[in-house]
Length: 245
Length: 245
Image (cartoon, rainbow over all chains, first blue to last red; front, top):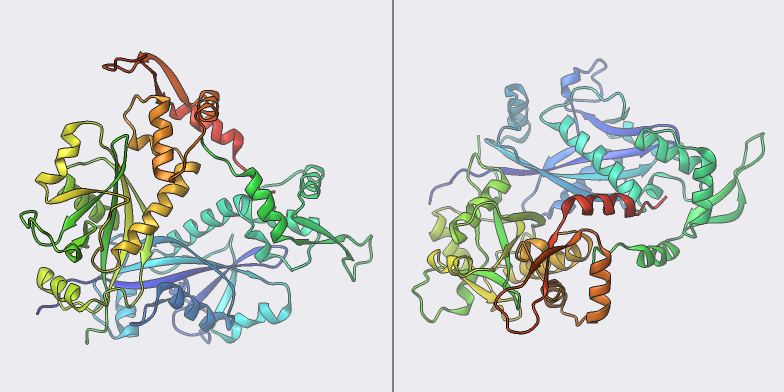
């Protein structure tokens, strides 16, 4: 029985981190973290060909674990990149063949995005021990393969879902101020929002629950902390879902 | 260079048809339409392994063209079925190997659903000339591989999208009565709806546009025809989209 043409399947992960100031992306150097002046074309999204008895989401979790050391982080499939020409760069393909020791004709990749709150030094340091680095989303270099396109689609997805689903709370500390919440929306959406309107809207939403706690360690007037209440959100969404008929 | 384990990739299509009475599913007999008493286990969703220079949506269009003769029909990706054990039935796998002449270890399939209005005899007859048959969605036999599961997910997706997106109009004639619209919702969702409330709601929606035309060929009082107005829908959705903050 012949071996017919057969594309390989991989997963690639767009890992978003938010440190209350900036949206960041986790990228890896294809060769080594020791490479002090990395060739900009050697940077890529974390990813992997899938393994025989592994489902796609398991591959994605394996990749995240490998490059962040973290389990149990928010992870969501957002697209399939299947263009037959997506491995057009000869040098990239040669690297991939050497890396995997496999004759590769075509790779279809399933893209995931992941959300990580960079709210303590432990988390922010993690990547360095795992051969990966955080880049500002506004300063991403040229990446290998079609990874800039995948990243772009990932950011588009994040923006769309941030305004329609309660995913943003995965990028914030468990307890956050309304200013931090606004900062998240402004940074990810790339817009400036009216502070008074934003607070008014946020306070009106039962699922953004005010706590009897205040932000610590700041000299000026401490700000009230809030948390996301999923039960209240479910009630809200059940009442407000739009039916087209 | 060795050939490492490498799953194959296919597309499978859940093709929905609506004839104003019933939701139907297009299924194919794996061997031949001549098989008068087909073994129930030989029925499957239309599908195909992908071809080398083909994107996934092109594969899905090719499959639809092959089994319906139709181009330009509504087609949407709704899931990836990637369980390593999904080809567990030995006989199914043997058939697949013979059919494709390929040594197959694992197939990951990308599922699409498609919507076809069965509003004239020409369309409803199409499938028979192409080795496919319409089955009532309530009387689907045991299918090959995990195709019952894929179909089930397809129906779940159709139901969710029918109430939140204007896809149902792809299953109705261009000009439809409000009764036909209600019938579509009742059949697909499997519920009985209050006729007066449904009409009231439908009439209030600008994107369900009343025409100066009436249903022909019926002896009782003719019903007004309506059509879907996409521009009005866009206005409606822009005004009513729910932002979580």
